[in-house]
Length: 114
Length: 116
Image (cartoon, rainbow over all chains, first blue to last red; front, side, top):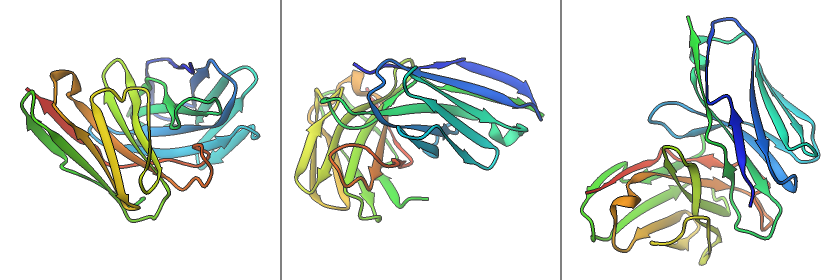
């Protein structure tokens, strides 16, 4: 059974810092990995999707990397801003014979201090 | 933003009553999903659909049923609600053309359900 772990569970940094969020998964047989952002009381917003054949994806100040063989992904946020404060979720789509859908980590709660 | 709406957005009900949550999309995407989000557990898949009348179970399907009679609507039913089903329910869609989630999933705003 696929399991996804996110470290740290919470992070508080001053505005302007570069930071890295970590995600690990136990089964490397994946189609893709997605990073989401969730604001309090809101739905999930897709940030980046990395296909299993890709090594990284970039969108603005965000860069996500994928090392499928080691079961790891990182989300790099450059020049953090208070508006980046949210919970960041990592999820994988597995190729195994089980149910379709995504397996999620429990998230990293990020606070950017002004 | 992907055109996904969920109704109702909030609901309070009593144990033993039936409850139906609705997800509506305007994107004509093939795949639709229901997840629940609980503190300490994260998001977990309940059921999903890969076409009209084509549905399958997810990780936590016990006590739930689904139906999809039209491409745009995916209904989640709690036949007899229990307090353990108090949660936030999210619908998601994906335009994957294969049998797996190979494309981006887009999420609705969620429904907060409280079972007393």
